[in-house]
Length: 85
Ligand SMILES: [Zn+2]
Image (cartoon, rainbow, N blue to C red; front, side, top):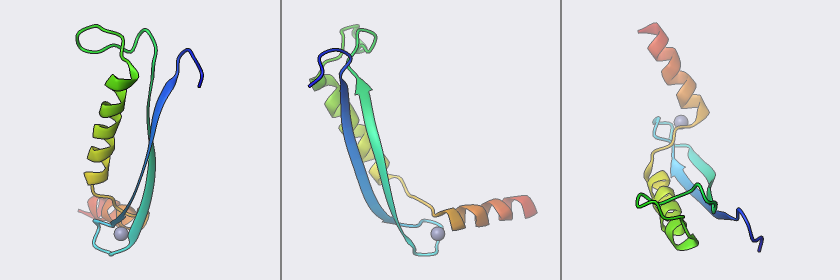
């Protein structure tokens, strides 16, 4: 473990169906991190500790997992539609 400016990291992955209607299964990975440093403070002005950051990252991860995903094919399809409309 490094001592200063340590990073609190959380890796998320999910496999979801494309929300564009093609039914493709999409695998997504994302890294959530925050650094423990004197400038990363809580709303009360206290320097964040690991125990402050970890639940925040978990909440971010949960939110990300709940978000629908669209494959690049459907994304370009919907962009084309927008241009034509
Ligand atoms: Zn799709």
